[in-house]
Image (cartoon, rainbow, N blue to C red; front, top):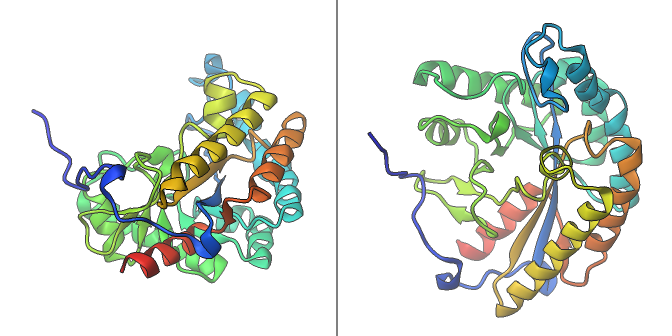
Length: 289
């Protein structure tokens, strides 16, 4: 049996009304910063597959745990240097486990999006009522910790059930990042719910862990992406550049200089409007009705 996806319609980018960004900019740029918690007795993102069946998997857990302990603080300094406010994909478990990170984000005016409770539990195979309860708890915990009700959502590992979009909209979520199929925001068929561009390609896990590329490769990819999007948008229809980061990957010491170089290029690009995900959605709604 196969199922046709009903969440969104096909509408090629060549057949849409022009999309403008503030001050005539052609590319809206945001940093999607994944701040996550992993359980020590469950598998997760790994740098070495040979130990993933072990409990505890100290090799891979320790690699991931470098993120909240060290890597995030290196990233914070670089974002501050380039005056970029993060758009955070936040596991709600982080609120109570790493409160210093929440405090740093509140001080800087970061945007907060829901990202499940942890990255060890995916939104798959859930009954509707169970998923509804989980979403409500995640959003409530993040609101309690950050003082802000999340307006956006990305599932752990970008995974959903068929019920997820509707359940999110019921809880007041306005935009979704799971479907990485466009360079512009677009309305889904769930009333009030937008899809916002995110990237599994321009993503430090994809670049460094999956493909084994280098820091200079990363910088070249970022530069090529923003330059091409700016050229595409010369037709008068703006694009979105999403840069997906994970503190345990890009936060490693030997990679920091490359994030610095990439941010330097993007935020100073004449076509770029640097924003948060919330700001991009607000502007999109204001010009599209």
